Length: 215
Image 1: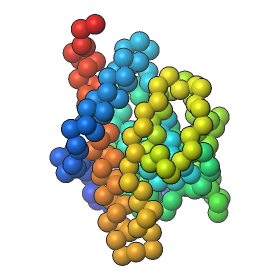
Image 2 (image 1 turned 45 degrees about the vertical axis):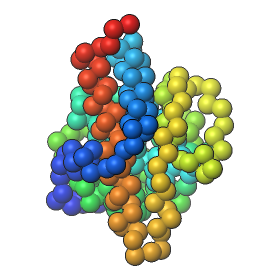
Image 3 (image 1 turned 180 degrees about the vertical axis):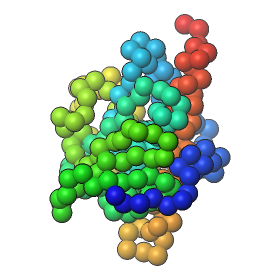
């Protein structure tokens, strides 16, 4: 098992929402995503989220893992998945930045090109199996809400017929810091940004399910 650091995942997650800057327009969009999730949840008591980026190696997997954590934190039956329009691998800098905040990684299937990991965190017996895959891989559900985490210019998203809803929530690509002295800082910054916005979304989902809006 790849060991985690002593930093608390819970502490990082709770503080992330206060350490990130979110414009008013972006915040309203996060609430719109939350409202859509809450409506689907109210109908089915289950929501599948599929985070999509170009090669499914950084932003989409960070969003998937923080959603996996948020579902446990807020006690919601929301399942998180991820995929790309190309297959890459779970980037090692992405793994490293998640280990820094307490996630545990168990190598499940070794491959030089695309290893599979089982990810968990303190306080849960659940785990998330993660590897780089296409957005329509058999591991992903057929009915889901799509959240695209790449910039429009970075990705050519095909029509996703199975998606109930599609949202475009781009994050800065930490890849641009690869090979520089700022790499670790950049990956942690993007992880914090994603964690903070996931907190806002899931917190609002929980609120709307507890106090549903009048129709």
